[in-house]
Image (cartoon, rainbow, N blue to C red; front, top):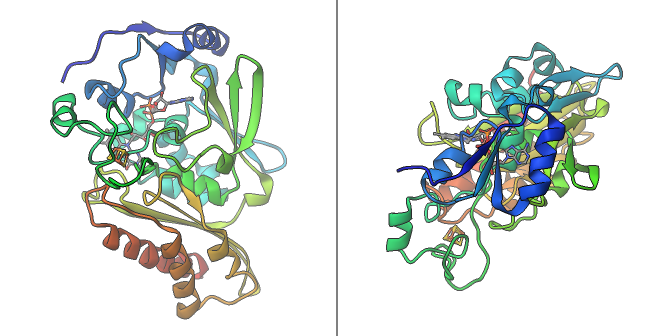
Length: 327
Ligand SMILES: Cc1cc2nc3c(=O)[nH]c(=O)nc-3n(C[C@H](O)[C@H](O)[C@H](O)COP(=O)(O)OP(=O)(O)OC[C@H]3O[C@@H](n4cnc5c(N)ncnc54)[C@H](O)[C@@H]3O)c2cc1C
Ligand code: SF4
């Protein structure tokens, strides 16, 4: 599958990048590591006139611990750099665990945290070649007017399939977005819409520039569990992140989030809150798993059955809660 024709823009700094973005917004796609964008362009899911290749913008890379224990991560930081950061591994382990499961080592060397956050939603009827999609009459997400997954409705249920966003939700992470009117900062949770088509609140002339991990989320225990067909490379088909703080054998705080079973990564507040103040045992971990499984809405968008994926959310949540509480 060949790439469509486009003009490559290679800014050397953030200011130059913003200039191109503001000028060509609607007709432009941002390339960070390109590990998702390039396959999608080959499948003609995106045919932009311009591609803004950010790889030369060195100021957009780096992990910067702050004196108060918070951390700033620039959007172009690779997943390998996150996985290998001893600081993040010690203080924000749920993030390094999740980053280490993305794709394969080669793809993590290219893929960035910003690209992982902005990742397009996925569906068996969408991530296909133009010829394949044409043979099925296309679908609502691209060029058609029917959803093959939920034919009665007008909503797209394509699943958000990034591994690091559930970990970031457990850490109450915020992101910085730069646009023509300057910079704004918002909780990551508010970035996703829950719709498979316009899945993120990002205008075509905006860029995710930084991720912030707050001091208060430092030093939680962190666990990430992921279901995929090939353990060496695949996108998640269900994923659960748990961050937990304990005191005197009881849970002082707990957060649970999941991915790949809804059109957005989901923080399951009730599942984390029910653990607070209690000592973890099998029954309690199982009850948290039940709540998480009820919040999952897997459909036939992915390789494994919705029933199995929902069940694995239950199982992974239970296992991750027990692991986070173990000594
Ligand atoms: C075989 C294979 C397996 C994979 N497995 C996994 C997996 O297991 N888990 C997983 O999470 N991902 C997986 N991926 C997807 C991908 O490798 C990662 O999600 C990666 O983090 C994407 O980052 P990137 O920098 O390469 O993004 P890109 O491909 O460059 O961009 C992805 C999207 O985000 C937009 N974008 C990127 N950066 C920004 C920014 N700073 N601001 C605004 N928009 C931006 C791009 O325009 C594009 O729409 C897989 C990909 C492949 C090819
Ligand atoms: S969920 Fe429906 S509309 Fe969305 S990509 Fe899949 S088939 Fe298309």
